[in-house]
Image (cartoon, rainbow, N blue to C red; front, side):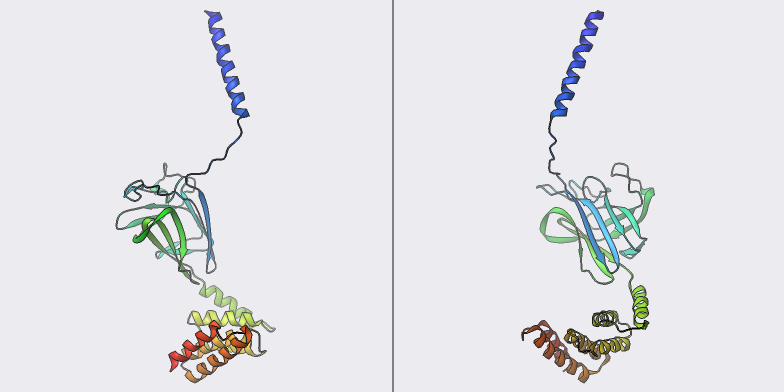
Length: 291
């Protein structure tokens, strides 16, 4: 009996040895992931946002209410939970979110989704706990005319202080409205730079005046900066004059706005060498609006 037992152990060990040797000799093969990973980076205003997620495809399956059940927590993608980070504090659908990195979960439903920002980056969908939620808020799904094959997270309608994060799959779009604060910080920086000694470059005058114009700030200062930029007849004079026309129009100076718009068009044609300059069209629009 002892001999048989020893023989059995020897054969078993030999089999394990050859199996291990065969495995060691098998070349490594990288197979394509069914739901490939994706890293999405976007700057909105002065805020850097990064989203890391995996992208499953429909593959002729029913999605919401099917492989993604209604009323249950979803990892908002595939594989690991989706991660989202913000370099500054933001608002999502009006809810304050401090700067940092979070896990993004959702609870899909037919008429309303719950968006979950979780503080637990290590958890998966299998050990998710509501106790680690930073916030929950609601979002309204919007029907989409076409079927999108692969789950997509995208940024749209990007402005200085806002954007929309869309969760898109199959025939459903879930928009999440993002807001960032930049005005107070940027105004302070602009004012400090403008009060410093030395001449500023023409582009800086243009950017500062444009920011004030777009954000309904001090138009008198914006006009002063435009005129300062025009003083040396720079190459971007036609752009500065177009902005000047916009500022004067907003201040109610119709004649001044029309004169600036016409001069802008003349310089744009000379600078760009074509009468089809986009600035000619934009200046004509200003003039038409004031008549």
